[in-house]
Amino acid sequence: MRYLTDRKRAVGMGSAKSGTAHFWAMKVSSVALLFLVPLFVFTFGSVLGESYETVTAYYARPFPALVAALTIVVGLEHFQSGAQVLIEDYVHGLAQKITIILVKCLAYGAMATGLFAIAKLAL
Image (cartoon, rainbow, N blue to C red; front, side):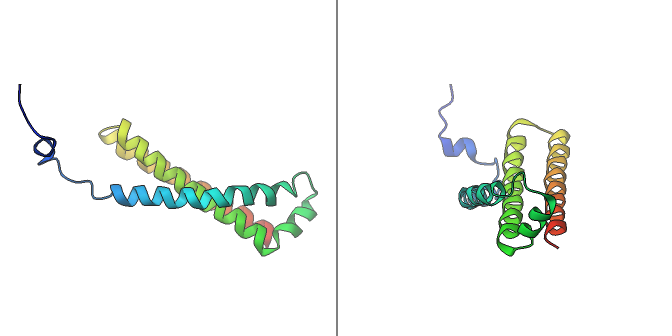
């Protein structure tokens, strides 16, 4: 039986140097989504089921288009950051790197598609 302190067991393991940044990014995006999601639900819900012309006229106004764009960007950034943490915890080796790259590509692709759709509606 070895009597090692927690500090002694951790020496030599190295530091990830990104844990605090990930933590704060998740907290900030969580708080932002706390306000953005209800705003998005109310702005999107008011034109749900309307004609195409009504929706384009509605999203031509800056506030609904901005709320939708911010919700997409912050939501998908929060998704990819959280998914990266999960992948780092449960997937190892080369599969970890490939999976992180795929999730980031998926998130940024969805973000670009959503912003393009909103820009197409707004303009």
